[in-house]
Length: 371
Image (cartoon, rainbow, N blue to C red; front, side, top):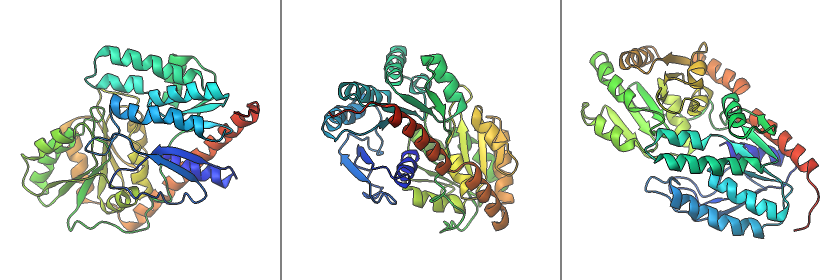
């Protein structure tokens, strides 16, 4: 979504854009909407059964062909790359050979995030070196949050970091549009469920909710490394009260968000504390409040008046918020008010425009080359 918004903003500024990416997962349309006039070059990559690129070999399946693709593409004014850091390293090598400036879009700090997984310690150390290498060669690093900017300064001590923020695509995630009807009030967890998030707390809390509201439903949409653990945990609940859906295209996910009493987001307090569940932006853009459990910057966001509930990573506290959301869902007027606030405050359009300004400055400073 971030890069799609950036592409649209670049096109609006009059720039020609070529995108080097992969074939989409099976559940996504092969043609990305609103990208007219953009050349999108796709290639196959090794995805897991859930449709994700996750792990060394899948990254390698994209990174190695990317080196040759970058060598063959007509010389651009600037290249934009986002993690994984291995892709950033490939871009640095090829862009150095061709004397092309590149911008590293740091939507996450991967060498920190991997510490929350069961990967051996040396993997984080190697990834830190690769990540530092990718950032060090960049003409500019774009950071998705002030927390990331501070951490990048610690890792790289670079003065070439610009905080542009993050948000939701308010052209897709909006209060207007089709709304999923489950027939009963439901709560929605949409997006990745990994070690970082600790989403199993919502199932533990939902057991308590069902004692008060037996007709309530809990829906999970998406994949992630904790998906199997979530499904196993759900087996102890009454049949039909919890459902799992596959990963959906953003337009379909928006329909489910509009119909939910609230969406769910979490970051485990013992995990990656800088993580921010960006799906919260999408939820409020649809006019749907958020229940957030855990620590980190997401707690401050969810604490804002009207956004939702920010609670401790604690089963009774989460259950209380879930029951309150189900018992008194927002009416249409409240949803529209929340969506209007989101459009003015957390829209990806403003983020993309800041990124375009940074890219323009890089392109102006770059020497003209021929290769």
